[in-house]
Length: 336
View 1 (cartoon, helix red, strand yellow):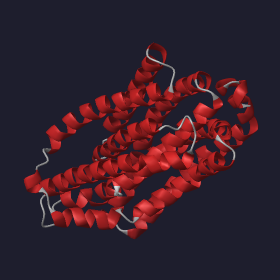
View 2 (tube, helix red, strand yellow):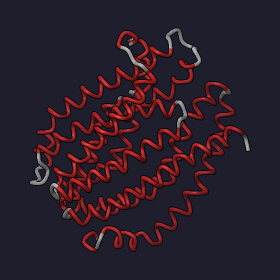
View 3 (tube, one colour):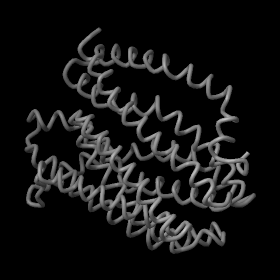
View 4 (tube, helix red, strand yellow):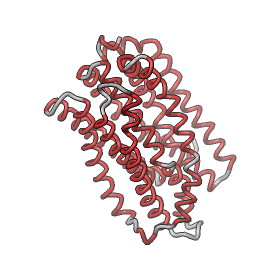
């Protein structure tokens, strides 16, 4: 086994352990949410959460991909600009762009509220979601640097920490404040602010970004690479989520809730296999492409795909065979 493939498997294991721990937290929260909220409220929650993900994809502007793409080149000094310029330009530029998109979304939430036209889909809930857009975008940027540096242990430790912080805050708000969607989303906002604050303090001390180091040329180059990839991310999200908007428009929130519960449970299981491999593979093949060329990159990707198939095929068959029983057990009878 080559050194590169061993590194890939080691980093994948970091993502796998982190994803399993995150999945465990999701499996704790999933049956609680399906029992605390009505089917219609669960459907509304799904619509808001998916909308946040779609707007966040725009707010990130693909810069998380640019960070991985250019990290090795700037860190090895292959460009005329210093590494400090690369860090400051992508980090500060990305945060500024995320703030602008979040503000625009906050102003546009009334249009979405009128389109959905559901009594539980309030303007206040959507307004709270604009803060989540900024926090998620900022988090993606900071984790992008850890991913590019292949600091997989630190990255996944943070993801696990934040997921359980979200879980604990959610339970505290739902059972001590109120069992409402507003309480749920405020708890998410509070937990994300705490987690991101800790991550920002830690990474800003390491990167020391300065506006005096900001380079318009570096930022434009990063946008030219990353922005077109928004199309790929958005189309993937629309392929996954547009069905919920159609169900809401034609049938109402109850049907969105029934559909979302089954979909989310499948998604949790899928992420155990897919997320670790896709997260680990990109930094490695970018480095291979820059240092060893096309043939070495192709060989590595072929080996990675075979490794994925070994895990994915048994998982698909097993879940298809007994997924209905699992949904009934975890989500309760009202989602059958």
